[in-house]
Image (cartoon, rainbow, N blue to C red; front, top):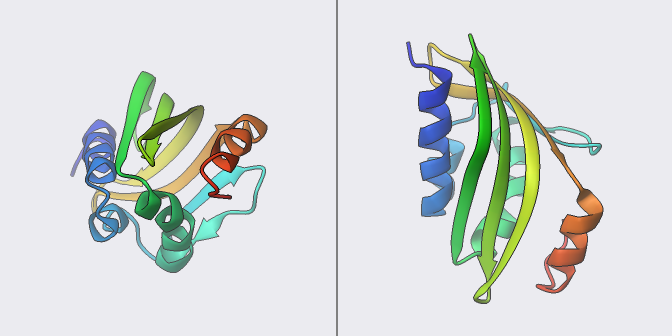
Length: 130
C-alpha cells in the first residue's frame, strides 16, 4: 500500500513530463476531477479531455506545493500550477482536495478550487480557453 504523499509526488512528476499516458496512469474509470464550480470530469476519457489541451500546448509544466496536509487516503494541497506556453509562464494558485485508492495507487477524486476569472484572463493571452 502506498501513502498519499507518494502518489502526489509521483503525479506531480508525471505532470512535469507532459506525458499524457503517464499522467493518466494515475486515474481509472471511477476517477473524477472537478474544477469547482464546473461539473466533474469523470473517467479516463473525460479527464484526458480536460488535461490534454493545456498539457499539449505547454512546453513546461510545474506544480509547486506551498502547503500540504495528508490524512489516511486524502490530501489537501495549496499549490501554484505553472504552465509555460510560447515561452511565457502562466501560473495560478489552487487549493485541491485529493482522495486516493491506496491499494492501487490511483487518484479517485479531486476537487480543485481556483480563481477562474484570474486564470481565464491569463490564458486568454495564450489563445487557450478552458
